[in-house]
Image 1 (spheres, rainbow, N blue to C red):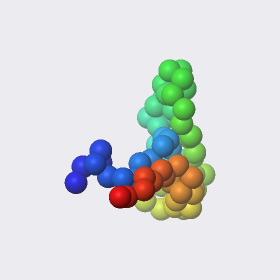
Image 2: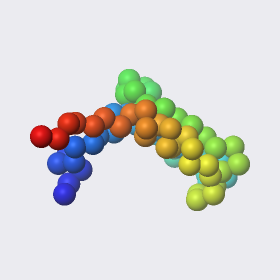
Image 3: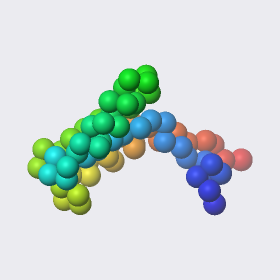
Length: 72
């Protein structure tokens, strides 16, 4: 099953990065998306690293942006 054939879709872009994991590239990508008018959200976890961060903002974003289609 590919992402395109799945009935659920994410309707948004979230960039979520920990400040202890060198967020320079993420900040650059955020700026690029903003400069091009691409709607997205950018969040930095103040005490977060590569894998040690709170997943709550990610789960909340996915819950708010997940779009499902009714199955026949």
